[in-house]
Amino acid sequence: MRNFTRRAALSAVAAAASSLLITGPVAAQAVEMRASHQWKQGTDARDRALRILIDEAVKRSPELKVRIYPGLSLNIKTVAQYDALQSGSLDMSIYPLVYATGKIPEYSITILPGTVGNLAEAAKLKKSAFRDKLQEIANKDGVHILTWWWTPGGFASKSREITGPESVKGLSMRAADPIYEVMLKSQGASIQSMPSSEVYSAMQSGVLDSLLTSAETFVSMRLYEQAKYITIGGDYTMFMLLQPVLVSKKTWDKLTPAQKAAMEAGAAASEKFFDANQEEAVKAAEDAYKKAGAKVSPLSKADFDAWVALAKKTSWPEFEGKSADAKELLKLLLAGLGR
Image 1: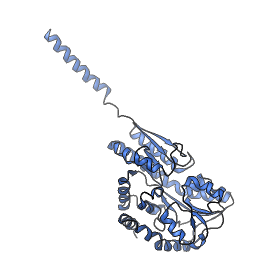
Image 2: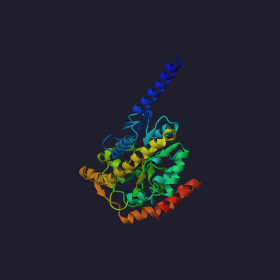
Image 3: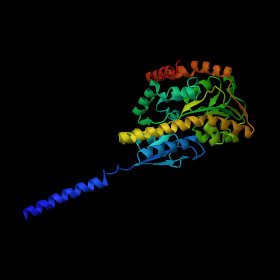
Image 4: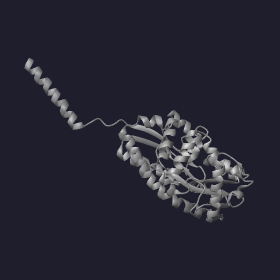
């Protein structure tokens, strides 16, 4: 009886070992995430780039499950998405950091006029001490910057062409950032603050005469139906904005190293697509406004230089005065650009 019991026990151990060899390791537990943004599905490169990011990440870590809610369909208002990321009630968002300058004034560096002038300069900062410092500030505030998406843009107006600084006098404008607004106010513009999702109705109602925004938004929000003038294209722009995918730090910290690597690989793929798309986005904006009968003009070198000189006297000192971190960010940004 004792030998029989021993043989049975050994057989049970062997069977268990055989089962492990057949089934392999237990599959990683599914990680479910929600991603939200304010733009239309399929028509805006930000939405398309996010889908590339997630597709590439899931190829590497199939247990990642991400559902995208475009066009504010998750019913979290544009600006409030930052709060949701901080609390962990939202996992991911395409979020222009300037919308959160009320919480973190240093985020104004991501649109500071007269600094990043084109996509080539933005690319220089991708692996820089400036980006590291910006990430450090974001992480302390409960969010993680996953992508390096920069959008070029320009001015659009209902009433007159925007050229040099003197051309904004008396206009009701939207610039999306309080530090940028300091420069515009110095030239006699009045300011209306709102996210991109509200600018169409504001122009339609007459609340706004003109605005600065990205080439993508000029088209996806159909602003060519309201504006009669657009200053965009050419070698010089006064609108370059970082609009990254942010991940809640609470969500990011729960991911395994392999899952984080998968997300970062997806981010790299999305950046390649997004950067290539932005020159096309500028051309699409030019074409859309011409078709609508608007006057389309690039910013001249003389007007660009006048704006940069004004920014250095107005917005830059205002930004540096915010904090020691702000002063360091501007120093690191200029160093990253070789200035």
